Image (cartoon, rainbow, N blue to C red):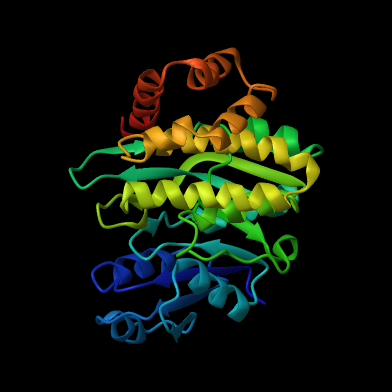
Length: 316
């Protein structure tokens, strides 16, 4: 059994897959397996992967089903003690897995999260997440979700996390073609299983921003997929997670409504107002409470401007 199974879904990634794999094979933690899942590529991706001479790499070719299903294929084929997920157009620092594995063992953590270094096409870059260096024991899932997940301290990605296989169990990713962010849904469901999370402030994951990436798909489609995700999750969520998930929904949908033609409809909907009313009863800061109250009670035009401002903060 390898210490870490690195799972890399890829679709038409011939321009970036070698760069990605070079960063993974160069890891100072050598005891890893690398599972590349070619999600129905029509370019030379599979040939490039096959040509790499590293016995730790295994290539699986599947019909195109989306990133979530490709990751599930990799998980089912893996045997490592921990999962790590890397996107085919990104890189990781050479000591990322060693640092995260050591932290997981030292703290008996179910999840270890490092920071993310965003890299933009214009050469700009930034550290994405708050600088946290701590280990958190989860004794109240709702309170943890309020403090860490709704506020994006515990980020919605999986690419910056090391996750214990035993903790994940049978949990798998949802349909990428149905929900915009299968990562977000996976993390919400994962919190139900986690007892200990370790945060590392160092930005060890290099996230290359691109206008063609999944993140930058049609904004209205993205918003619709997120609305469906929260609607479906909250219906079946454990009782102690329903309110926290509604708080998370209020924050995520507000952020995602920026520059969407569908923003006015979403911000005026009874569904979104319900999320806001629930969020205002949660343990949020005064500043955040004022923001949420304005989204609930202000005129619609003001709500649209607030959402645009909030969404725009992520681009600074």
